[in-house]
Length: 293
Image (tube, rainbow, N blue to C red; front, top):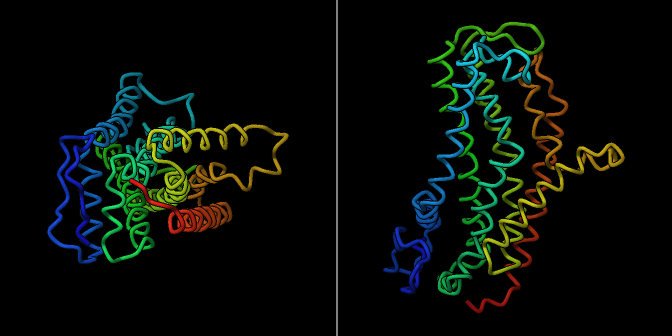
């Protein structure tokens, strides 16, 4: 679909204006347009730059300090294999940076269009609100995977350059070859991408509740922080299995031999449940919402 865009001034003046030459519904073309806007926004580029800077800072800090001993497992293992820079960078960004990046995109998905007065123009395309919401969510998911891939790529390249590669010693004490270690990193990226997709569904739902994208972003970040806080309170242990954040670090099971699949499976089920429930809530809200802007 070619998305319709009003001639009103866009708040990000450097962004391209979407083509308004046709009203035919072409989902793939609309998704391409949506992704083009996301990845051309300067604030999003700056955010990705911050995400990419973390593995650089981490690798340089470990290198200049002469080793990673005394730190968390991923950090202390960096000197043994450069791929651990990617694992460590993903770990340290899970609590705030990655959720904030996804929350920014998700919060802007519907609320941003309503805020600048273009949402009603999008709905003039004879495609229905469901497909529009599906494309918006697909763009959020793709951005989340892209952010994780960027961190992993920068961390891997710099880590291998500074610390070398070769065989990797897993947390269980066994050793695997470089190819298998790289495969486990790819599985980690896929697992975390699913987690961010779940958070993105929550953000999409919040975005349908307001016309203020900043407010939606802040709300999602606060919910994420609330889950982190609840997860650290022992008296709320009954709630921990139901928190999205509880299962993010389960990817550590991929660095054991054999792979600890129980937590990974439970995490994927939780991610899927969050994604399904909140996407359906977003759909229920959006399809019954009066669009005035």
